Image (cartoon, rainbow, N blue to C red):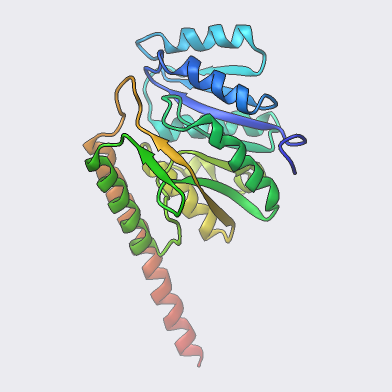
Length: 255
């Protein structure tokens, strides 16, 4: 699969991204003119949905999915995944509309996914060699690094940046998932998706990207989102450890 013969859909959830959405969309289409974009807007009060509609009217490569209100990042992506699967796309890409994910990194993700046919996903990583952040507050860097370290320790998942939101999935792997069982709302959704792939034995690859602090609008990060991630990752880790212990006991009894 190459980017030329694969149908690629970039999913962009939005909530109050009126200033940055047009710039991000233009950058994506400039870097990868063969792809399509789905803007998933949660009834943004600042008129982002109307701007998305205007962009869609001007370019057939852009579609808009309107939702009735702010329902969380996880449900937005699940809605986008269902939309993309129903329309037969080969690759689904998660990407922020606020400018933090650089369009010039998109072709890299797609090239690596094409180069490894056995890979279910390629993650854009801030925390592996070659990855970086620009203008990001030290507190946010610490929070992200600590969160990813906690994920690696608790889940035993060999991923440097499991919380990053710039990634490309092969839809063949997504069709095997029970999307209806995904309850993660905030950034924990990103960990949830990678964890499900790894638990299913799928290959996940990381490539370095540069994450740029948004220059307009407000971050969606909140204490509630941090708490959700902490609680869910801990619960997944305990269940995983319990399965390991039970499996070890069964093997010992057979010996």
